[in-house]
Image (cartoon, rainbow, N blue to C red; front, side, top):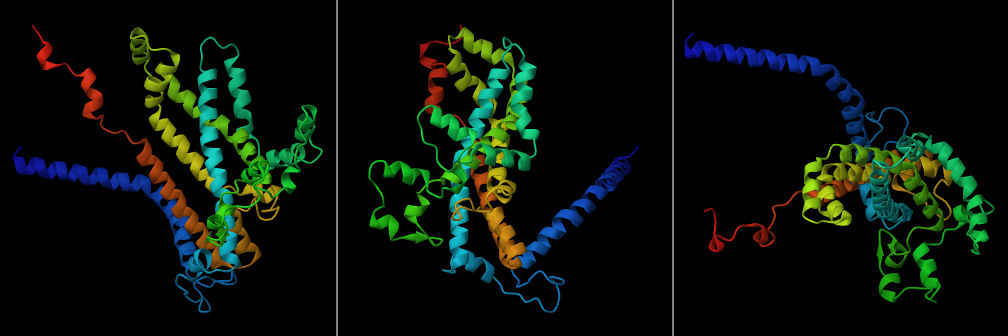
Amino acid sequence: MSTPARTARRSGLRSGEAASGWLFTAPMIILLGMFLVIPVLMALWVSFSDWNGRGSPFGGTVSFVGLDNYSALVGGGGLAEQDFGTALRNNAWYVLLVVPTQTMLSLLLAVLVNRQILRGRGFFRTAFYFPSVTSSVAITVLWLFLFSASGAVNKLLAFIGINGPNWFNDPSGVLHNFLGLFGVETGPAALTGNTFLGISFWEWLAGPSVAMSAFILMAVFTTSGTFMLLFIAALQNLSGDVVEAAMMDGANGWQRFWRVTLPQLRPTLFTVLTLGLIGAWQVFDQIYTGTQGGPGKTTLTPAYLSYQAAFTNQAWGQGAAIAFILFVIIVAFTLFQRWLLAERQVSERRMRPYLQNPTSGGSK
């Protein structure tokens, strides 16, 4: 067979494979387009319009308002900006405390239940994972009962001599409360006199409220089990040769974990952090079921504020704008932690001790 004929035949086979590939993926592409891409594009249009939720968002009564919905949130100077700044502050503290805590706890649990000498490993894995499969609404109701003024948590604290707070009705920030123990009731003028998104820097540094702290504990309690399973799967797929080589070199348990095991868990760590960031920035059902943003808007989150703006205040454009700002924040944090966890080339300075010195001899 001549070369042109052979080339034409290969081209025909590749065209057939491509057509078959598109044919098999067409149903999923159509579904994603209908239920994901098109709704997202419609929501994007709504964020640039003054649609009030009545009729079609593409109707003649709907006007294009440009960036008005966004500017009202990030520079309007009114209640919308202040509420958005408050929600962003609350959620930022939530993310800052939940994501690292649940990641470290889930990794610790995975290491513990993955040990061969542990008896009843299946029981412990099930027990730690069970809160993750329980309804978030049920867990929230349970948390409201446990952290009530006369709940089990305060009774336990009273048993050890601590007067527990009225958790879900206390809007004070935990960092401000801590500073108050040393007589610091207000911040310096540089912090109290300057604002960002309608909130003073002093309020940004208030820390999570006591009420939000209870939600932080609940998030760690309910999500650590899921991420524990991911770490267990990764630990069971690690090669034991490297660990044995480290043991032969005299590395202790902590050195083997920090220098050998943890670097091999980098892909799983990226997955856990990404899922944790997405879930922490999108917290909604706990707030909706528990406090509806109270007390004093100290548990208000951007996701709940978006729902409130759209479904309660009928400001659908503003609600969609909040959702897309939240989307940009999540993407930015994801890209940042991907850059942070990316594998980097080892510097020559660090590699020098491992390289053979050409002047000290070589192969004989």
